[in-house]
Image (cartoon, rainbow, N blue to C red; front, side, top):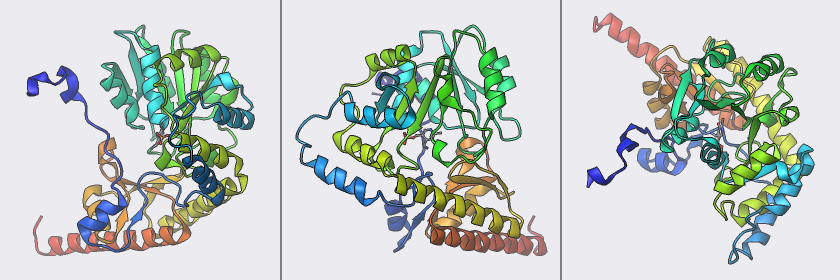
Length: 375
Ligand code: PMP
């Protein structure tokens, strides 16, 4: 049987998502579990979105609008682009797949970073495309090194900005310098999944790059609290969108997601509330980590990368016992780090309490081993 499976499939390491709440509840026999592992919005969708979903469910017997006409109009209004600049997908995950299918010829390659959202590499490999991974520099995308890595075979460059899992960003000057020097036959994809959380004044004004070989990725999974409904989109020039439309499945975005997203993008109060929770939570967590002397990376997104200076797997496991799910960064090659999503005030407080408890226990364990001469 095994020899019937596609030959290069064994080279593909599947994406490992954050552990689901129910799974941890069952496994550890816990009543309450907090998940700060997948950069989701800690708030449930607001009433406006819930009403839109209830209404749309009455037409769930019909196929959805494959063109997402009303959603396109709502998003283009907000972003100041035209309907023909947009394409929607079942999460921005699907858009990554659509981009690779629409633009890459045999023998062409993808360039991205070695410590970034893993889907760029995984989806490229699933599509039998070669990927060149450029190391980060100081936990930031190294655009100079990426320019050097681009060669005649390069077709796509993926840049997550801000980057997941580091929370760092490339600024306007660096980005514009990069775009001026990148060859004309290369398409640069800026994945801005966390764009709504950005505070930095020098963040690139990416909407002004649409006349270049640039594609922007956005999502409703984070600030708009719709991760469970799966909806992401690309913004690009009309010719790029037309190419992507050719490889899109006809009904890739379901009708409940479309209705929910229209309501979500028009609910400015909810977005403001989310941003304020993230911004206050970030300040609180920075302060709490400073107090304990635990190092972290300052973030422009809704998560923080924390350096525990010890193997993160043990700490991650111990936290699960307390009913707290964070993200163990081993998969990303950062074996002493965890990534924590900013939650509600109460969740952040619990995270700090559990982190301190677990770290103290680990230190005591270490001291006891030293005393017993067990190293
Ligand atoms: N891009 C980045 C940088 C992300 O961190 C994520 C979510 N983890 C995604 C894309 C995927 O988002 P979606 O839910 O829209 O597929």
